[in-house]
Image 1: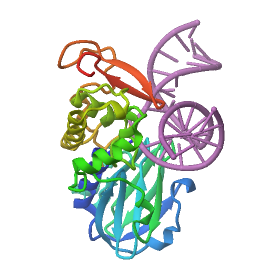
Image 2: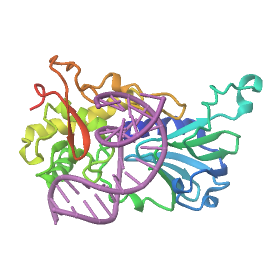
Image 3: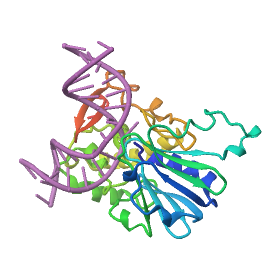
Image 4: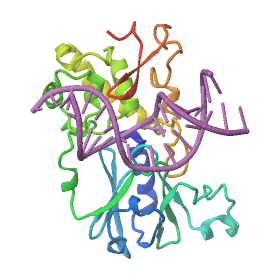
Length: 278
DNA sequence: CACTTGACCTGTCCGC
DNA sequence: TGCGGACAGGTCAAGT
């Protein structure tokens, strides 16, 4: 599911809630979702919550707990029941957790909990000592390291691939997934099917700017919810209300009123406006 | 090598 | 209503 803006949304939300707490219990309902020895994190204190690309990290005092939500993962935080006024929270206040897709449940020192839900079971959680697992990843698009020069160099290693397919390659840059790849191509006014090698310098420049712009917009609206995504409070993201092309096939382009088209690139649905994008 | 397709899973939606 | 097929915010391994 989540691309950079969705993971960033969860990161910002969790940061305010769990720093300083200790993990007191880990309940693994689906073993394939948790790939390490959970006893390593028991009674360890949470120091920070970080993000690298689409991977979320809960930094503990002795190691890092990494999460990849893949297509359908969710991380939902639930306050301690006794912290609700009156002491009798409704099921709705507790986000109805756990649910059928709940795979792992963490309990914290103040009685609050974190639910890892993942309908499709593609997501994973692992405990690592350092970030070497993520060494192969490309630059962070919202950091200074994502310079136009770096982007151009990484992009041009794939001259014969469609632009949109290359945006999904996490060694070129991290964090862009299927929604924001189509949106970035739209903002750039470039057809997602164009070969990278055919892009002009001006178009590469616009693409670089558009990637940053669309990801920032995604964060601003709390991420995108097509089906699964919710933030740590169980709330949906609003970005798709403001999207120009993603999942809008058959509808009118918000700029030129022509019909938005859908095609397949690299096996993924791809959306574009034929008249705005050349 | 560069590039494409299939596999991993579960659930929903659409056409017959 | 049932059934099959396509499809869904991702990433690998295996194919060509």
